[in-house]
Image 1 (cartoon, helix red, strand yellow):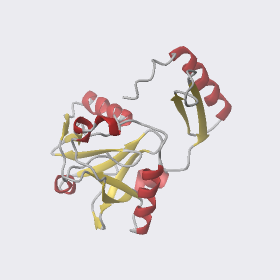
Image 2: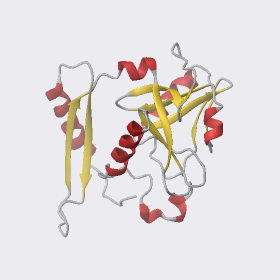
Image 3: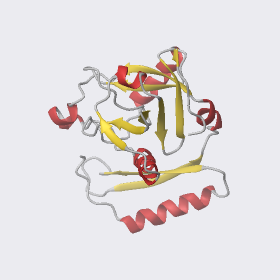
Image 4: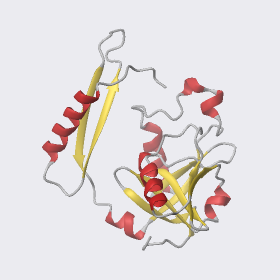
Amino acid sequence: MLELPAPDLGLWREVIHATAEALSPTAEAWVKTVMSRGVEGGDILTGWAFGSHSADFTRDRTEGIRVVLLDRGYRHDVEKTSPWLLAGAKTLSYAINRAAAREAVRRGADDVIFVSSDGIVLEGPTSTVIYRRDGALYSPGTGLGILDGTTQANVFRYAESLGMPTAFELTTPDLLRASDAAWLVSSVRHFAPVRAIDGVERAIDAPF
């Protein structure tokens, strides 16, 4: 989407391994990679990796999180209608995500699920939505101007290995609320069950 040149995978692998080794030993840690066009007006790419020890997410993973639904401010088809807005690109701007997290705290919640202006469930500020209905796992459809969920893809692959059906679908808030169970999944926090939506408590499936 940003029309950046293809990364040198060998070089990135080297940098990622060096960062991970610098963090060892640790129970959990993460490494993030960033690539840009470099200094404005120049033609030399800039790239780096940085990492940190992970926070303790035991409580989120076991007891669950309370979420609020917030309007993302654009339609669910923005990726097609306005590609220059770069909806779905993982850029350096985290201002909206952090502002949303602060709004969640003001509303007595732990996290946010964004909804499009025309009423379609999108994603969390740093996570992907997964929910279960009638023994199958679902996630909001692709092409919605949201990030591809790498953790969601891993969860779907694992579920399929167990014979559990998976699918993408356009999801409304009512459909999410009516699900048997729901989670926000991400590469650092992993699997956080949703225990309340907009202040309404819901059961979590701890064994699953």
